[in-house]
Amino acid sequence: MPQNYIPIFVFLLVAFAVAAGTLIIAKMVRPSNPEKVKGMAYECGIEAQEGSRQRHTVRFYIIAILFVVFDVETIFLFPWAVQFKLLGVFGLVEMLVFLGILVLGFAWVWKKGALEWI
Image (tube, rainbow, N blue to C red; front, side, top):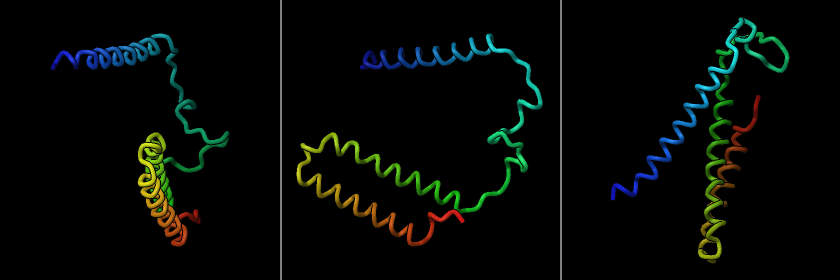
């Protein structure tokens, strides 16, 4: 049984070696001359007027979380699409129920005004 895991460990070792080797070679090749200007924040060609640690409104985080939630939920469509013929009508009905719940959630969030920036 343990011999079945040997290819996995070899793959992990090679992946680690490639990543570490790339970082080491890049460190040896690139020039290292840090300056104050290089460390400054760059935003669309305009000098930053405020620090990067400013406060954000809660709406920004709500929209970010909603994006992640809806994005993860729509990822469930890919396995369903792969097994569509095998699942048949039952799979179609289940996916329609899932999408219905998803649309209801989106409508509720939209009605609450959580998608408004200001």
